[in-house]
Length: 381
Ligand SMILES: Cc1cc2nc3c(=O)[nH]c(=O)nc-3n(C[C@H](O)[C@H](O)[C@H](O)COP(=O)(O)OP(=O)(O)OC[C@H]3O[C@@H](n4cnc5c(N)ncnc54)[C@H](O)[C@@H]3O)c2cc1C
Image (tube, rainbow, N blue to C red; front, side, top):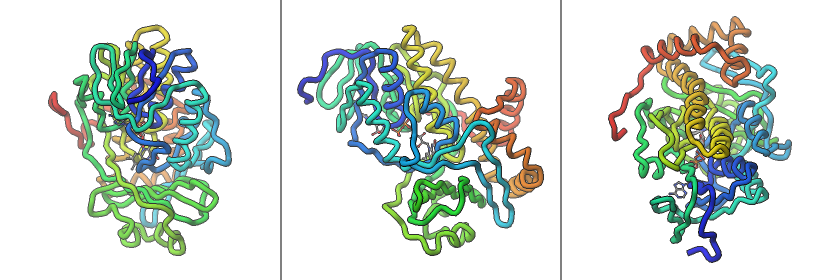
């Protein structure tokens, strides 16, 4: 039981990961009293590629968090590599992406939320929601609003009956840091059939490798046979810290709000990790949710959430289509390598620099639905 905890708060946030801390920050800016409860203790680590796309850096800045050179490493674009093929694109006017250790990002967000005046409860698992109150760490607190930011296996989502209606297959994710000087200022994505390894520089002498695929391919020991070019870069590198595993998939809910509860971050739906858009989405959703709380109405948040997840979901489908189809992938990479403006344009589209018309988005979405494997789920997911 917590001693001296308040009896009431305007906003109770379940989960103090990136999404939960971001909404705490955005809501504090609006003057709300905020309590955040997380079952873990900071800094919280998680399997992650540790790359923030430029739109993620901008979204973070908008909620008051500025990353500095001491926090990580900027990157200037994305490079795809598949055997002998290589294609790359630079971020245009949208600025740089940023590679940052997950624990460092968490420390920064925790400090910012504390300084903004949020009440942070660690090692406080949320056990129940009922009638406008939340039970966490053995004590109940009344609240006006509840934000469910408790990740991909969200209990809040389950308690509210907001189940997934659509998902792609699950892929295994594995992260491993290596002590080595980054050899490029791009994020490199190495492709193989049903598997990718993406490399993000996160320090002056450290990189993060995230592997995504099926159990067969996802293991650091498999790197030399599946990604020999990457293994050559790592020949003299040592592993720094333990490997960490997770699950990746795209998943959508029919609704992200119910009564006084709103979901955000991975709890509210996910995009496959290959997009590198999970954190950006969480930060944008946090700002949109705080805007909705300020007018005492969650419906604009539901609409903003639909709009925000559309592009990343679409890009995830496109990339997963390439993941499973070697001929298509190699043809696409050849085109991207031959016509650099095509890849630059796609990247600008991906990070929101140049939004396409709704019509072209709708058509692309339909085409990808036909071409790519996905599951429509029953009421229980
Ligand atoms: C392999 C992999 C690589 C990825 N790479 C990238 C990348 O490069 N860039 C990017 O932007 N995104 C990436 N992502 C996605 C990104 O990690 C997620 O989108 C992001 O972590 C979502 O944050 P969140 O706060 O919603 O959830 P989480 O980070 O999962 O946080 C949820 C929090 O809720 C807490 N919690 C859960 N249940 C309870 C409870 N009952 N009571 C209290 N607390 C609870 C947990 O302890 C946790 O701290 C990757 C994902 C994977 C799997």
